Length: 288
Image (cartoon, rainbow, N blue to C red; front, side, top):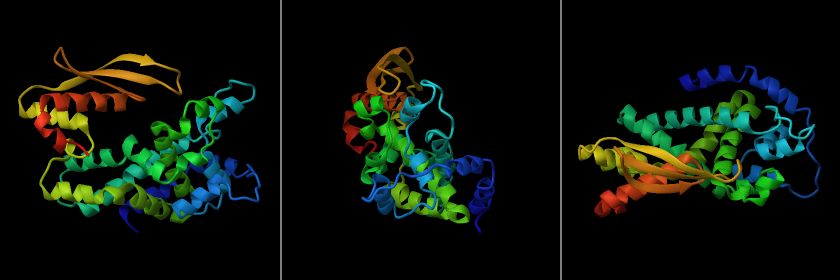
């Protein structure tokens, strides 16, 4: 048993399973036709022993809030996938770290940290969700459904993390291996060649694969230009459909603006525009 397996095996026996035992009391709705959840099981190559755990992983907080009794009561942790998302983030991060150390033993901590950040970023997680058609199986509130929640990157990314946690919990002692199989196949392998290519070229990972904020920072550092910083200048929309506008500044000078459905995505957009503005001849060699 590896160090990672021993470390995580202990977690599986702790209070999180109190929540799982409550979920097992929920009954799945029978259906003669294949349900979206069952179709998803085929696509991920794993059949859940506890169907309620999969249903919980697919339940967005907007639906749990709408169904609460009395109306408007704050969600319990057993009502939506947010706690599973929290666990899945940790499990996926751990497994990605292990895989990076195995495949890139020569890389230093800084590069490995940036590579991990790329692989578990909202962008990459949501791309995996799209490949798996995860949005088709989500349980959303009416408002979230009406505003395009099934295609929203942040919703999809969160659901992938919840799915990782659900597999980890559902499979018992084999949970870590089941989660690892999924993470390696869906989150790591699709980008392995890209990572290897960059490593063979001797590049620094911060500014080459997917991370425009690091790319901009490294460009400015190379020019002794100082550190960029980011300022949120506008937030519009409801909690489930928010848009952010962010500026990236060098000292007090605004280099560029970016927009996105999260502060992180808006910052990345601003950094990309600033990078292209300051180094147009290098833009084609920027993050993939």
